[in-house]
Amino acid sequence: MSSTPLALFVGLPNPTLSDDEFKLFRDTNPLGLFVGRRNLRNPEQAKILIERFREAVGRDDAPVFTDQEGGRVQHLDGGPWPLFRSFGEFAKLARKDFEAGRKALRLSSQAMGSMMAELGLSSGCSPVLDLVFETTSDVIGARSFGPDPEFIAALGREVVDGLLETGNLPVMKHIPGHGRATLDSHKERPVVDASREILTMTDFAPFIALKDTPWAMVAHVVYSEYDAELPASISSTMHEVIRNDLGYDGVLISDCIFMESLRGTLPERVKQVLDAGSDIALHSHGDLAESEAAAKAARPVTQATLDRIAAGNARLGNLKIDYRRAQEEIEAIFAEKLAA
Image (cartoon, rainbow, N blue to C red; front, top):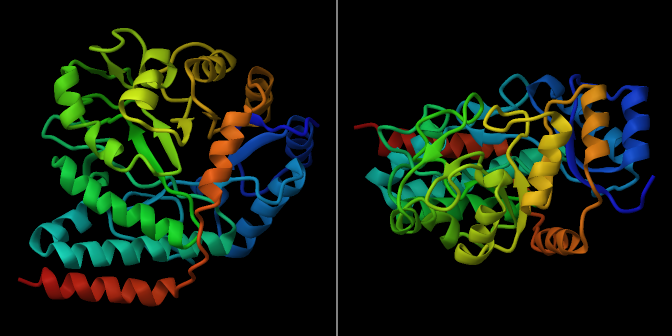
């Protein structure tokens, strides 16, 4: 196994790590693991799975991510874990009482961060900083705080800081903005034709405001005024825009390379993402053969990426809160402020 990890997150089909998967990850050393609902059954099982992956790659701090935004995107979705409200619901509360909305959202972020830290999860890939319009694809919907960039940035700050306080890495998505896309990038290749001026003032603005967020996930969306052919995730032009125009210097990870906005074989997609300038390719599905193919196409992470990762990790706090009690307090705030 190389001592330098591959610039790759892998996924798993099951809630356990097979002997063959253990061997593959031991031999190839992918940087991190992405887990979803199919992998997360209960706290004890989740902890064992995460520990076994870290044992395979030989790194106690190997990042393990999931999707845990709240609303319909939360892979710790009930059963032994409480359900959390969507960003759209917190936005509704904040529009009625801004300080109450901020307080409830900060508490919700701390609660989710504490819950994930208890399991050994490094990140819930949050917050979503995309704008939402009447024409926005339903794939965003209530995952967004709304159409106002300043409002989104203010609420997004509560999520970023709340997660950092509890030792959970915030990942802002989907940089540089999925909100003007009318198609779902899971299924098709969206094209945004807005001008550079409009994009800078609107879609890009929350990402610029929160450019100190340690990680960001790159959208599979074409921004035709910059690159008429390629989605941001595989466009070197758009990576330059993100790094230079948006001023972002954190870790860039692609959205999942299985999404149909991308084209080509799995190894080709891994190479496209890394060639464009992302630090890491995200391969979140992954049966054994797919993980092996992705690993063969990946390359070791660069020193610049390792430095970015270290800088983010250095900002992690260790606040621990009772997330069930926090949920009760959040629900009391909603009941009081939205009763009318």
